[in-house]
Image (tube, rainbow, N blue to C red):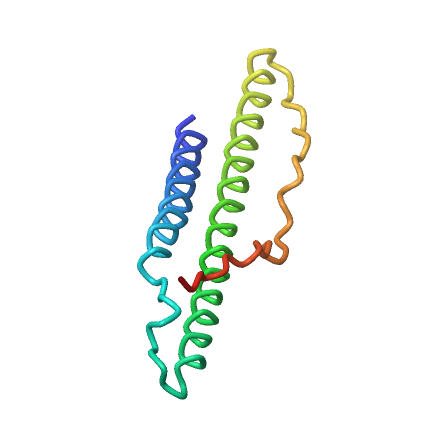
Length: 126
């Protein structure tokens, strides 16, 4: 049963990666915050701060989508490992009984679809 074990390890790696990405972004949020007076009293100061907030919001959306995709991959890989394990057990039982192995029921694979869009994490202007 090496394949299901390796698939479970892969799923665990994907989960660890998704958590690492989410944690890194969360840690970075404090570093990219810009105080409201950072642009001084320049004419374009408000525009600069607004553009910074928009860029941070777009980055938060991208990171959130990446985390969601990695988490969906975790579920899909675990389902695949379960399918391998179930099929292996069904065939083994059939061989032990010296009967033709029954056709295992097909577990529906997850259908790919649009990645879930998490709500954006707004950048804060201090």
